[in-house]
Every structure is written in structure tokens, then in C-alpha cells.
Image 1: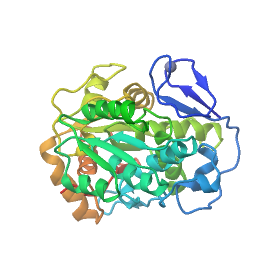
Image 2: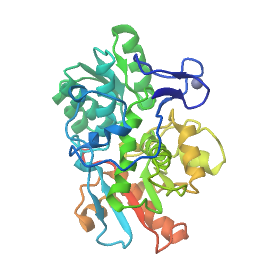
Image 3: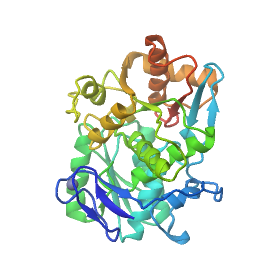
Image 4: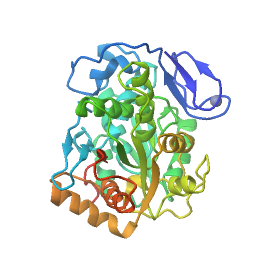
Length: 366
Ligand SMILES: [Zn+2]
């Protein structure tokens, strides 16, 4: 097991806190020496049941609040569609998975305090897992982030600063803060372990369905969920659990902030910054992502795609998802629900295909 750069040849053993590749400032990923072996036996009733495919830690080092192993619910209204309900996580979004892995590793490797920029849910998750680890947390977020999220972070004892602009501006503030006060920066893909926690969603899909679905629709901000699952599928193939076939992966964004969709349509390898991002699906309000290259690679290699849905229809779609399915869906998932409708209408998804739509988080914004 080692860290490997996602863009150049740099590798390093796992022995100290690191952020980006020291040579090319790309994200670092954990590389495992997997050989084919039997499936994981059920053990713990949380994400750490998959610890054989996570960075090695002792039992007492795990910082957990019972994240993961979320339900995969068959849609009541759309045959062949399943909803992976990440609102059931401890802080009611999939961000819990990433923070459980990242805070576990940060603490193990000696971090004394933790910091991250957020569009909302990641900050809430970091605040909770920092509290669980007994480490102080600093989060920076845009000033118009819903007050329910600000209060949630403060409720777990985190120091919150509201920084004018969007998440990329908050990210700059976190880097300054860490340079001045110390602490470890856990911004999306700026450290290697959040993606490890999120990849477990891919492992769970195989256990939920017995096979991978034909299509995955994923609301995309920073993109670690997509990137993590894509990584999981490669690992699962090396473990001998699946063959070379992959689900077609679709990134879903809002017409008010769609840098990945634009880059996908223009055939670019990187996604240039989206000017003046506007969406009330706060988790999608990420104008530029460190993981853009990895995301675009996964979308293309899987024969998937990227779709921007009408910002004005997102809230209604989320409400429809809640009403028709009884699932606590946030606006990001409303976007994914809407994307399913549009992709079916375009013929990009067939009537007989199995589709997983991610409810990445609950309806938490007030
Ligand atoms: Zn590199």
C-alpha cells in the first residue's frame, strides 16, 4: 500500500500527513497491492466493514459515527431505478464517509487540528468527525450558505468563518488559516483519504444488487463520489469480484453551475472555472474542482456523460422525489432525479436498464 500521484510517477509510503503531489500538485490516491480473493465477510455494521480495502488502521484508531451501509431502495414509481439513500449517514449526507476515513488517517498521522472549505455538508461532517476525534475544527464557507448548516457546524464546536465568494474563495482562506495557525487541510482531493471513504459506495452497490447497475447518476460538485466509485470498480476487478464491464457514469450538475458538463461537451481534459455560479443546490455550487481530470476520465471511459438540468426545476424535482418515494432528498438529488427523466427522454438510458440515482444528502437547507 502506498500513495501514488494521479497525474505523474510520484509514489510515497503512507507515513506522514500529505496534501497534493509535491512535484505536480495533483491529487494523491491510495494504491493497494490487491490480488484476487474472496468477498468481504459482513462484520461491523458501518463502512469499516470494508476495512480490508481501506488504509490499514487499528480498531482503536477508527473515527466512526456509524457511517455507510446505507439502504439501496427500489423506486416505487420508476421501474428499474434504485435510490442509494445517503441521507441515512450520521450527518445526513455522503460526506460522512469521506470524513470518517480522512479524520481517522489525519489523527493517526499526527494532525492536531483540522480545517476545510465547504459548500455546506462537508463542513458539517468534518465538524462532527473532528468532535468525535477530539480535534479542533476550522471551516470556511460562503456567506449565503444556509444558516441551518452554519449552526450545525457550530453545534459540533467548529470555528466557522463566512468568506465572501464561493467555495474556491473559502478554500484560499483555509490555506491561509492553516499556514498561520497550523492544522491539516482536508479540502476535497487535497488529501488522499476522503475519496477512500467515498469509494465504499461503489463496494456497497455490488453487495446491494449482487452486480453493478448499468447506469449511475451522481450529482456532482467536487466529484469525489464519482472518482471514488470509479476507483472502487478498478480495485474490485483486481480483487476478482467483477469483470471489465462498468456502469455508465453520469455527472449531474445545475444549469447555474456546470463546469464539468461544459468541459465534457467541449472534449476538454480539465474543467475551466465556471463564472458566477448560481444554484440553490449548494453541494453543486463548485465552480472549479481539483478532481476535474479524474472525473472527466471516468465519465468518458465508462461511456457515460454529463448533464446540466434546469436550475429552476431542481427544487420541484426534489420535492417530487420526497413525495413520491418518501425519501429525505436534498436539492442535489432533485437534480439527479430530473436528469434521469431527461436522459430517458433522450434515449440515453433504456427502459430495461438498471439505474442507481444517488440521494447524496438530506433536505437540510433552511
Ligand atoms: Zn504528481
